Length: 395
Image (cartoon, rainbow, N blue to C red; front, top):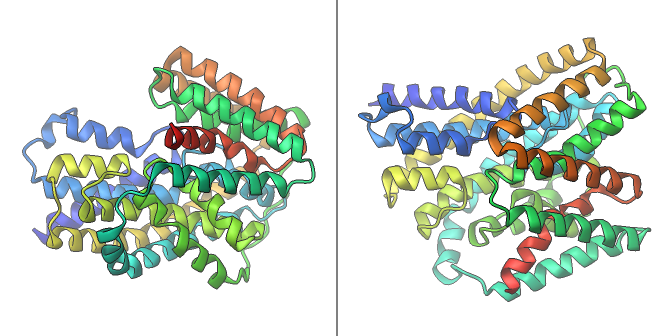
């Protein structure tokens, strides 16, 4: 049995590396295919092995997903905000540091998850579901605070509302994987188009050097806000990071570290949520529930070890592949790479979300361009997720 566990753990890491590196190929698609019987040759396997595969794939995906989101500007839900500070660091020759900061955050996120298992076990006994209107009120306060911190407050409000309305419309459309064209357009394609238009050149990347980011404040803030993913299913890790940033007031480097921490903690907490409150918060957790039902202590403990081992191995895989990816990026004209990336995400969007997805991608891209040219922080575009969440909990 041990050999099989190790085999499926390593196979999951390989799969998560692939899904993380290829924009648009999400782990939810693989998980759904597994439980739907698409891979018929797997039907006779012990469901526990498939669950181990899904867990290790999910952990590896969170790590590796930062490479395309930072180097290429092709984000998925959870890493959309890494495009902002990460791309800025890439342009200044600090791309490797940006990816590795997020990766270190992911490692700390696993540690945070392990430390918080027992505290959250007791908290879950009393707080399983917060009142929706309390959540909405909290998100409104956070959103207003984010807007009022801007110098151009009216533009910030306009960007928040414009992207929020767009997000609300798209998320209520009959569209497969609506977040793919929405987030890719707002946070990825918009920046790529501007880079192509201005013929942006990437500075020669500097060797990685240690960056002191004063982790304690960031980790404390992450510990406070990351459990929101366990009790508030509508919040993404990007949204939770925005909440945490309101407390920590992070620098660019700290923000990337926090995003990695919260993204990984949120994924791990989704498995904890399945165990504690029998709720699924991610597609991966939903797939495991379909395979195993209610988790026992023994199975959950095994999953914790799988998360830890997968995280350590994925960290070193990311360090290796990020250096190779950056070396390749330096040899290619960045404008041409931007065009190639734009074509690839367009093709993927068409195959996954269809012709309607292409329309959403185009509208989102032009909306993102307007937001960038407005001169306010691009984090205000998180309104595309915050406003629909506020509406959901209010009504």
